[in-house]
Image (cartoon, rainbow, N blue to C red; front, side, top):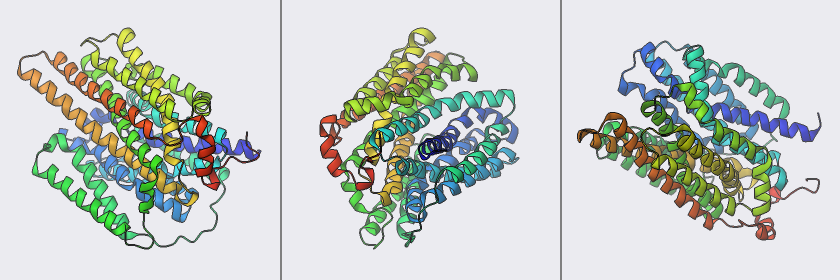
Length: 485
């Protein structure tokens, strides 16, 4: 196999690993009723099947990326895949509540390492500007479409087999990815791992985990409760301690100079707002179709199919052509405006929304918007990163996206719940009250997407005319090779 073909096959394997991680954030949701019945979860304890994964995934993204920079991207990616696969097997074989929740936490840890490192490996593999844009398009499709694909996969596996296979299906996939990565990706160069900033790692991980814990439990505990406010205050204290530590240690986990990287910071802001809107799309639209329109799991998955097909078309070359023709700023703006329009269609749809006149047009707009915007956002996030900081930059970007998505979903779900509860108290029919709650959340989500679109104006080097300037700023490793296309 030629070196060129080997690179692209390595990309597909890396994306398969990332898809396995992304799928797991939504594939479990469809199986929750079966899990509750089989293992005897209560309504309040069942949420930890999801929350245990989210807390550890979000909490360890930054640390996972930095460990990859220190010890080798390939080595850490393989370790993350192995941990995630092993934890999936334990989840699938679990017969008790505590074992399933513990294994889900381990899945989150492995998933954090894989997600933080996959992007770095792709940036290492592709240095030519055109090839990198195409590669990031494929990766972007996996990230954007994975959530909606998970809804369909979860419904098929749960209805055809049982909930255990939602997890056990990861075993053959994980093993194949592990061996293919060893064959297709060259071993890491010998490097001195240096010292690990234990104080920085401890404070930032504790801060992120406490923040996510407070967010995902905000609805149950109450947003003004002592528990929620106390956890958020402790989280802020840990974040403050983290920045204090990073300003003083010799080898910081996150060099504070990264905060001066304009594109990384802007991409983090855009990604956080956008993920807040997209989480609402994946989760709330599925609930709307299930609880208001009466769709089953398979029909919900099929409703997402148009957006998946459109995003696939963008990932297979269209996104790269747009970036090379218009730069990154214009596609981000246009894509997020289209995504906002799709969310607005959901917000304005009647209670008994039509599949042909409301749901499919909204899904189409969201598919085009996501397909157009995600690749440029990822390119912006990584554009200023040096080779020995690519894992860290990936971790910072992914952490911003995850925190934005978790916080946004919690806020929007709380808004929908409050709106529904208020209408029910006034005697509104259940379906109408539920629909009104979701509509309010979609309207705010559309606002998030619009603000993210406006933030695209802050991206530096966003137009083709600035190509020469970008080349001067781009680190040597990112300069297109003389043999590239």
